[in-house]
Image 1: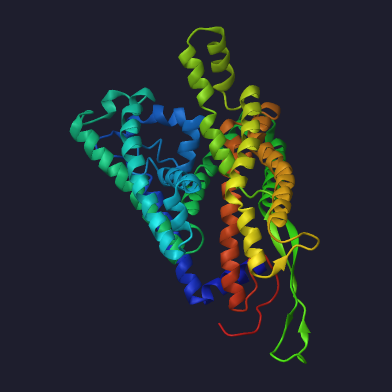
Image 2 (image 1 turned 135 degrees about the vertical axis):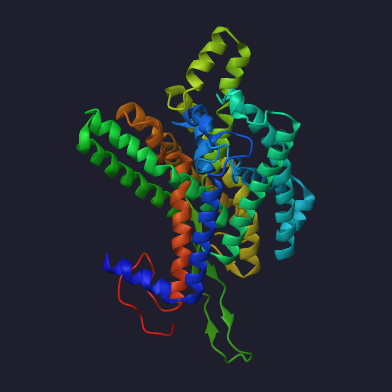
Length: 450
């Protein structure tokens, strides 16, 4: 504990780092306050039915978790940052097939700014579609008509759409400001804060259920916490695990004359991540997993329709999670293939005079790297699928409440772990540059200037 306090004091002593941390916390506080501001014209007292529909899981529960409860509150941030995430995914996938976007990707900083601008405009378009769907869907989610104080006329719909679109744009602006002026990736931090906001209530409900109802007591709560910590550690290992490919650089002459000594190239490594796709396979699979239930509903009272509705409506069911795991494995290979450019890595390596020992530069190196990626992606995809379906396992085997079980795996846990690691690494870089020990290290303050 003493070392942690010393590290926090060192953070405070560095003016630039302190200002960045304060700015980040302030921006996150603004986002959390906005998540509690209900849309004008809606009675917040009558939103209990919507809150109950978002508790536990399913698509609504996931959306509510990512928005930090703003979805269930009918808040000005009800759409959250997810339209921006959707736009980013679409632009990234379009970059594979659209020549114009491929050209922008090769233009460096100027191209990146243009791509960001395209992403922002696409975000607005997505919001314009999602905002009316959200407003008209409130009634279907159990919100009574009396909750709409001004009715659901054109004035209410148009004004609310403008507010929801503005809320998403403002959240996007907050995330970009945190990235530029604060600590960590702003968009990811907004999502993580929204997820963590549901953690205390979920754990409290689980604690009350175990203790007051004599359903295992404190001993089972302790077992659940130990299991949760183990899952977090495994998720950290999955996030940080890499396969290092040795790279040798050609020897060169140091100096201009023949008598100058020969300098042999140093050996370095190409780090290939075990889980290069991050949480994207889970997000893609989660989006598709709601299709079987809709198809079953479209088939009506037929045997196939009833079977699909019965087995794919419950996100903690057996068949749901079997298909979910298979889709995650497939999307892990797909997303890794489009985000890890082995051909470009091989060309860059050849251009800089490097080579993999025993492998010819060029196409042979590209094929070798592609083979290695295929080999390490398989266990990575299995591990990712296992973490994704683990909430269903703990619900069925241990009887954990569904809201608390969502923190035992899936997108929520991996986002929290990934964002925490990235933020800690950025803080460590500031501390080490100023000759201080980082958050992940122990020891006394190193000598040097502040």
